[in-house]
Image 1 (spheres, rainbow, N blue to C red):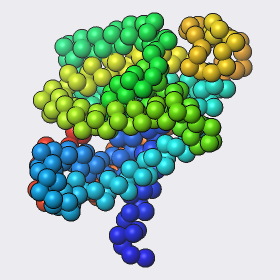
Image 2 (image 1 turned 90 degrees about the horizontal axis):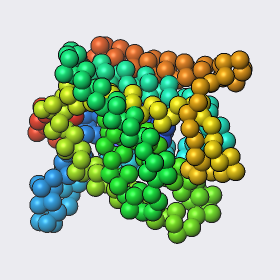
Image 3 (image 1 turned 180 degrees about the horizontal axis):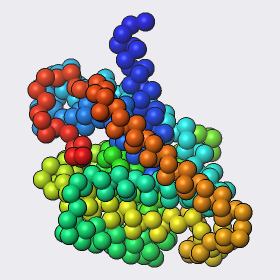
Image 4 (image 1 turned 90 degrees about the vertical axis):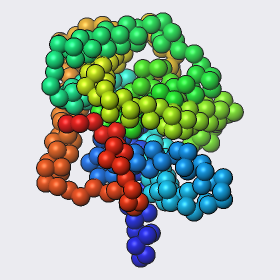
Length: 334
């Protein structure tokens, strides 16, 4: 088989793993890219959607422009990511509607462990760093409890804004874009629309939701990713400290033990819920706790594998172009 075809299939497979991770709140596609050794190549390719790329297009130098952004790699990876997301969307939508407590338990464990990984990226903790983390935690705790996020707006414009924000998290190791969508109350809308399209029951509203989300992701990827890169390059410690606090404070949203105030609502997005303390005399409570522990362990094991690979010097893929600057990645310092 032609080598280029094999490489394309491998990139699609890597994208599939990233897409499967991105659809699960708590697992970062950026972390998976790190493990697979393609993170630097991915971020570098994205960062090259710049003025020079536009100038090449204006001059009609299409092939040079595509080569600059590593289009073959991005195309194969993007196809795999989309396949991974679509494959798991229906399952995640069903789990939220039918197995909410157990599903939130897994999410809670994933986010809790991921916040520890982000805390470690801060490096040397100081009093100002701790203060920023505390501010992020209190801010997120208050934010996710606001009525507007209990019954968030609907419609393409809001979904577009959610896509703008969520895509930035999807390319950062340690935080999940799906988790951001869950906090913003748009996760069920996205997975529900994907499920409707897959089952052939979609309506115009479902198509508009997906188009708005994709547009938001595209614009956010090209715009906000540069801001994130700049912030991590110049304000790495404060940024990661605030991010760590934000993740801890937002755990309020996915506390698995909840009371549904409108039990007649069958769809997750229509339910109004409040957090409650668990009944430790019930066997189901201990199953939920066990799922939390398993989720925490899975993230820690994943992190251990990543660190082991870097210590052993596992080769990473780099862009084919030779003029890569040393600052062409937003990979946080360890």
